[in-house]
Length: 248
Image 1 (cartoon, rainbow, N blue to C red):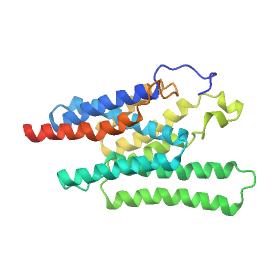
Image 2: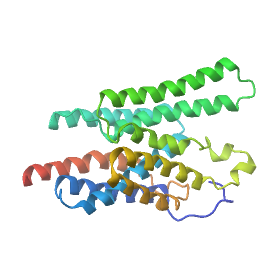
Image 3: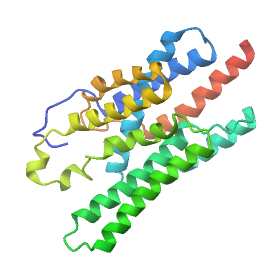
Image 4: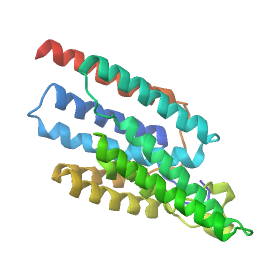
């Protein structure tokens, strides 16, 4: 993020560690302490932070195929394990994020097309059709499959991406000096409000993630912890489910 923007204290790693801790508390409450409502409320912090970071990952990745491929492979592996243990077809949050990434890529393609000086009507129409098709595909997937957080959960990272530039270093100087992070968080809060209306009052607790995200520095952090967060999700669930089988 350009030096002209306000300095903020929380890196991407710090925010994701907060989200991972909230997710651990949430799933511990869900599987081991079902009457501890406070644990489920604290857990509402996790999804919006990770959704925001998915949008950031789509913006900064050097290889769209590699980024999408990693999420797809992890989603497939997790679903296989989930099926073997629980015989459930419930689609995990990794499937949610896979669908979100596809829509974001279609949105980025439309933005790139509109930015071209020599764009044609046909090319613009194709880009718009691609975006509409991807959104329709996500809607249809949620009609026939049970996907974590549903259609509006899939669309949450997309809300963040609507006014998101492709890269800060390619922005015009006038735009680069504009602090656009609050705009992204405002769009996220709109998506969270709609998600709360869809899933129930407890999901409104996810809005508390917005003040934390306003402290995002735009930097990843000093350590490369990407694979830690990908591994943490299935491992902590496996441990908690094992404990639940022993206790219950």
